[in-house]
Image (cartoon, rainbow, N blue to C red; front, side):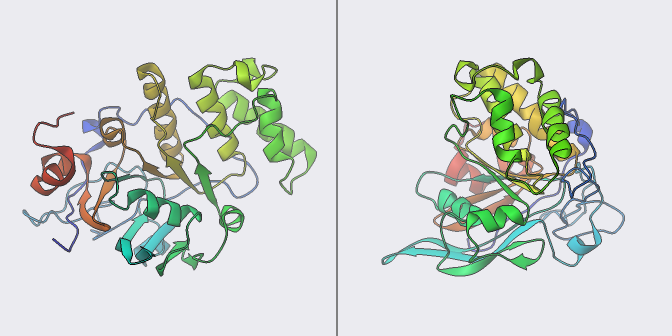
Amino acid sequence: MDSPRQDGLPDPASHPFGSRGRVSFPPWDNPSPFGPGGSSPHRTNPEVSEAPVHEAAGQPVPSRVLHPPAADEQEGIYPLSAKGLVKQFGHRRVVNGVDLHIGRGEIVGLLGPNGAGKTTTFYMLVGLIRPTEGDVFIDGEKVTRMPMHRRAQKGLGYLPQEESIFRKLTVEENLMAILDFLDIDPEERRLRCEALLEDFGIAHLRRTMALALSGGEKRRLTIARALATAPTVLLLDEPFSGVDPLAVDDLQQIVLGLRNRGLSVLISDHNVRETLAIVDRAYLICEGRVMSHGTSDFLINDPVTRELYLGPRFSM
């Protein structure tokens, strides 16, 4: 099966977490991911946000993405997109022509079994691996050959699976270590640090050493650090890995809060249930190609997705 499959998006009320999000963000003066944005149209109906046509029924389905599509997205320009990604290691082609996009205010999942090319695709988007063929775009600008720090300057944020905090610095010092590198005045740094501490519920821990934090607190600090540069797109690598159930729910609410503020999020994770519970749609990559693409409900009920990845007994 060479072409990806796709379905429409469900109504917000049908989502297991609704439109809740406990995180709020201030209207920073510099370009921020929390301003107005839109979802990404695949095949759009001008009356319905993000209304792809169901393959079987041929009918548009209302979206649960909270923002209408932006004008540039109607022209095919997205916060993050990739076209024809190919990666070959020696004689082995591990990624073979992957196309994908993430719209404004949209959470997108990247799923796939081990060895399917999912992680390689994710790392090509981040900038850790350079594609053999194809291109990566941020807001329509080609960034394929840009290193990670240049992509970060263009608005790409990355949260690695490994712990990415300074263990021997306090919570506040961890945030300032990022903010001090930004070209903003000291007062703006202070205000942004305070906002992040408050928004992520870690203000009471500001003078606590990072090594003394719980797993959930470390995750909150890690995400706050990733947002210190005000990215427009955030890529999360295995965010639910090794996280206890209470912390998973907390993290899901944080991600939903980011989406509600217009930030675009891409999640690559092997924890399928936790990922499908919050994404607007997801791509399934197998054998280096996008084999299926659609909403969580569509993928769960898709025979191809079940055969290749989920298995016959999978349920939410």
